[in-house]
Image 1: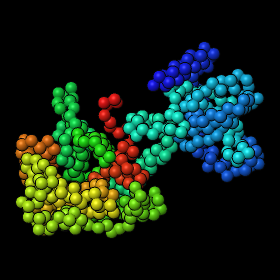
Image 2 (image 1 turned 90 degrees about the horizontal axis):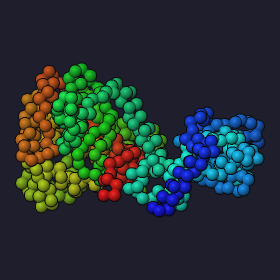
Image 3 (image 1 turned 90 degrees about the vertical axis):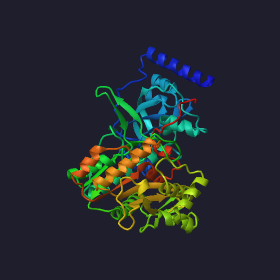
Image 4 (image 1 turned 180 degrees about the vertical axis):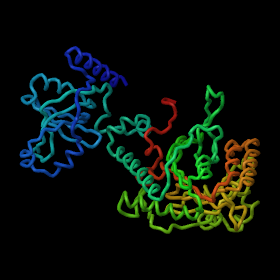
Length: 494
């Protein structure tokens, strides 16, 4: 820290000296006309003769990443948001004063450059500098070249430095942006309308989760950051928008892990006159199309293993999967008391209002979910843990619901929607009783949503897709923090 403080002190002194010499260290008088990536794409294969014949002057700006001085000349590398390029500056070309100024620059400084392209003896494409201007003086040094920013938590905490020194990190977020763009394109091609619904809600709903609370001073009322947009999107179904989707943030006051961040991005969509089976087929089609657009294939590698998105994907009922994948005897799975006892033996804490359904789901989490590496739909969810789902016609204790698992992660959750207002009211009341008994994740009563259903919501199905986890898969990232620019972390130094 003392050495770093000394470097920072020296750089602050440089800033003062530059100003005394009439050089503004934070200028805004240079406007680049070209980007490095464009130059590399256009001239990357050009010979020295072709570059000389072009005789073009280029104006680019970027951050200094490497400097090698050789007396009267200096080679350096600089980068912008599109790539990195070598530069070459000579004292006889720019003049004594300008060259002396360049020699006082540090790694991390941002400069504007004007010059022409040529190839060195090693055939490297290089910008020969005619003139330059200092645009931003970096006060803090970049991490050392050979050590880099290797501390994982420091990389997340100082993402701005991570992006400067680790180019592959930028590619993750470029891919993330492309994935979201492809999802929008897919939905819009099928007649879905992108909408926005409230992120501050008087009643949080749409999922079993503990919300974040806030307060509106003028209205003198508590509000909650939304845990899901579901109930508002279904109100739009009532209002006559029959295909809607939303891509936005959700907030859940829960633990942090490699798969969980308190704020996360989802796409949630609803289609009238559809069933959960409709959406399973649509999800297969969507994922296969996105993967093929990104990679030109239906197969990807994730953490050293191959994932094949070629449809159709396996479909297993939850109870069935506990036996076939989890190894729990079918007799135990089918015996409600035996399964609850097994769950409690294995550390599952049943909260108020919970029983066989919760035990089934938690044992699934423990014994099945981590083993579902290839894309797999799980169906047969108990109504007990599906308060917004339509009951199955074949078994009223089960919901017409699915979840999609890939690489041991839940990626999507969808179901045929409950549109019977009396059934919905009773399920809300059951959730209220569980909340009053101490279950902080139980659903709130939402009378206005029940009232909306009483106006008549068409039969429909809806689904939520976890975009962060999908990006993890498609960028081969092990942690959700790798695909979120600024993940939530404990206070620095705690």
